[in-house]
Image 1 (cartoon, rainbow, N blue to C red):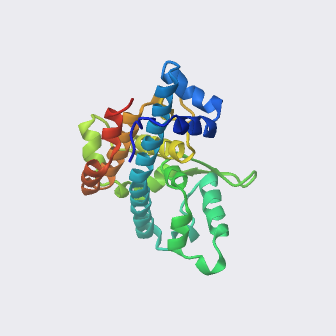
Image 2 (image 1 turned 45 degrees about the horizontal axis):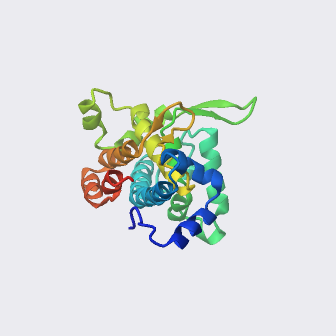
Image 3 (image 1 turned 90 degrees about the vertical axis):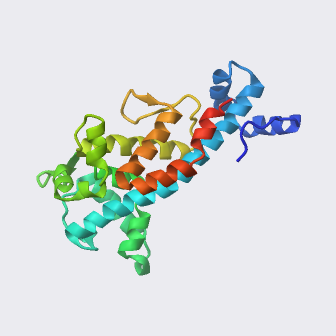
Length: 244
């Protein structure tokens, strides 16, 4: 992975300037005190940070969904998606959309799980909402799903919450999953990390270190051995230390 290229060839710097709009590069120029050379280095550093996040989350997202599916299988069977498990309207819509997108010959539990996005699994940890339309509009409480067994997807949760002086709850777990989800989307959509990143619907803005910490924390919630491996394998600490 390239960090802080020397830009010894002026043509390379011009190529980057041409590839990136002035508006987009403006974010990096502001962070660089309007030094064009430093702005280019920050841009490439940001690219490397995004790539490192996606490399870690490529493992973490699959681990999360498999842990959740294992509990849904226990509760409702391998065709849990055909059971009224108390999902709210948005969750049902995502489930239906993913199912409809599958070709007839691939409508299996495994293919459906692979099709569902990170937001679906995060949604199961949200409070829930409503399902249906008036007059058949009813409240769907995801806390019931959590208590029924979804909490078991996070075996490290109770010990970690206690260490923080907190309680192991659905909402406490959601806080970490929501940060990882925000990081994933920001990296996937090529949004800057150089000035931190916001949490959707909140005034909170986090930095790269906090995003990385959330990834490792989620790994620990799921499996301490996974967290140990990810901590030793990730390139993010080196990138954070090497920020131009």
